[in-house]
Length: 122
Image (cartoon, rainbow, N blue to C red; front, side):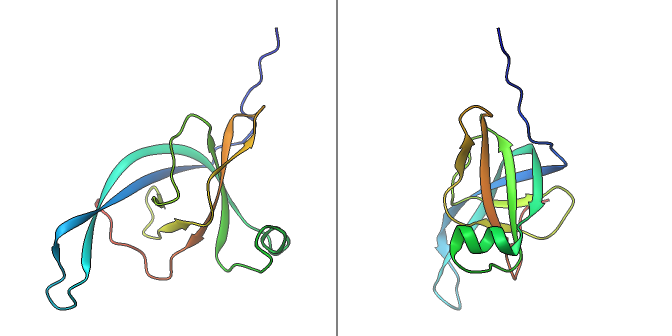
């Protein structure tokens, strides 16, 4: 019997935040307001994306782009906002999270640091 282990090396704790629209509107701009709920905190392998990888994946160089590898059992959607535990910076998912390899059972997620971090709870 062969057991295949997860071959990414978690080096950070990642918070997964989901947003929902509030019933109220911004009273000055009339735009929808959102509230964010912490869904989970999971271990991840957080790596900067090289210019070469960015060029191959998107046909252009993305600034402040990173690759994140997560366990395959983690439910993640492209609408979530991500934040590393203990940091203020927030990240938006670029593209769709993918199963990187069916044998390794993990997700690969490409994210981009947001210019203006979203104010999340705690």
